[in-house]
Length: 563
Image (cartoon, rainbow, N blue to C red; front, side):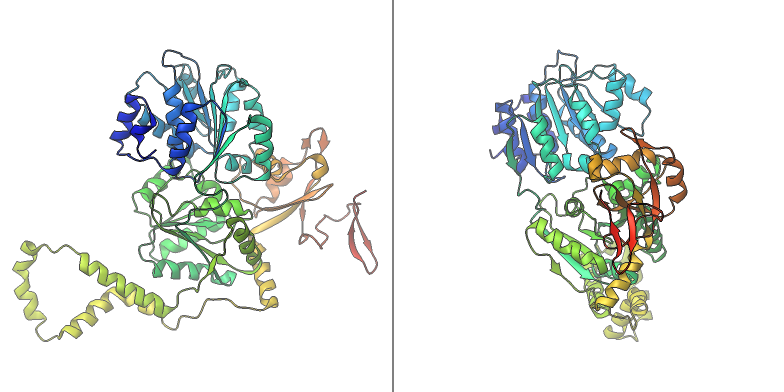
């Protein structure tokens, strides 16, 4: 199909699409829409955020709606509040000429009473997050017995965030005759089990290739010492003066620190993290969308659901533990036909993650150098010349003053004048990069171990007496932490699952909260112990002293007993 007109959509839908200026469907729309219009068969579509997937599933839903029926006909599940709002707002645009159809968004962080009033208007389409949808189902304010279509949007993100139990509970209340549509950028193992359990002979369509981010994204990394990451970040920002991008950090504390330092150093920057209220978050995002903020520093959790098409760069201050998270991060640039660049600042232990990412991408990433002082000065000068060429000259306003200015400058040569103009513009760069060192790191094994010790400084490691025999998965453990520490904002690091117990890393500063919240915690009837661990992972003890599962033996160090 080459145009939307050829898809056979209702006249009202076509008019709304035309008003939005859309003529040709994107690849995922061209593949999914005809299939969904012709068949009630379940469908799996691999597509990144920003590829037009909302229209791919919502236009067929609208086409099949019965406006005279006042029950819920379609449910769209999203991982975050922000994505819920974006999805519902986009659907409302497609309903411009169908005023009888109601769309309601339900999500956490908004009063339940207000959302309950909206549900009483008997909407045909619900867009919601799993937790809040399940709350309303349990409260019998949301009934899905007549549901026709269920959409799992960004399903891999929902599973990563620990929503598996909520999805199971929601799906159990829907009729078996429903059509299930799953849209995801990747297909992790736990999602395959969800597909096997809840989908019936689904058709698969690919908008591009599964697990591969957009081809117009340049994937790069630079090796630096942990202590030099901030200076390396500034050098890339100076080397790309038109940068409009997101810097991803592991913890909210680092996010705030980096954003504050950038602002103090004169960069248009701000932070997006879990400590912000919704009003503060909206303020930051409005400034970023209006490009008043050039560099947004964010955690993975806080940045979920962002949908901005013209980002030029994504910079990984810390690489994520999961390759799928790297794909989601990088996929925020290179959208809508634009090119983009993903830059990872890699040190110490993160080198192994680069190889994992390359395996997931199916291609090599490019190692690049941190720009030198000479590189940055040259790039900034060329950028200044470009601005001079494009500047609009208001001759009528300037001409009256030219003679006076010319008389003041009559003793200067063109070369003198050019030098003064450039010095006025670039003194900050000339001084900042005077005798600037090389930040590229090519250290030996001892240097790398030293760097790893420094990088671990932002995380604490804990033991929990739940393991694989308790059917614990990374997602289940993340969900436990989110539930028990719901009053706190935090970032989770690596997770190590063993048979009888596990270890997890979590942002520093939560020791007292963890001791309090897990003091009388039980899981499936089993008393659970969570304690601070000073171990270093596999090969070290890791287990708090006094635990009988660890026995110290002569010459053999610590041995794990799995009996």
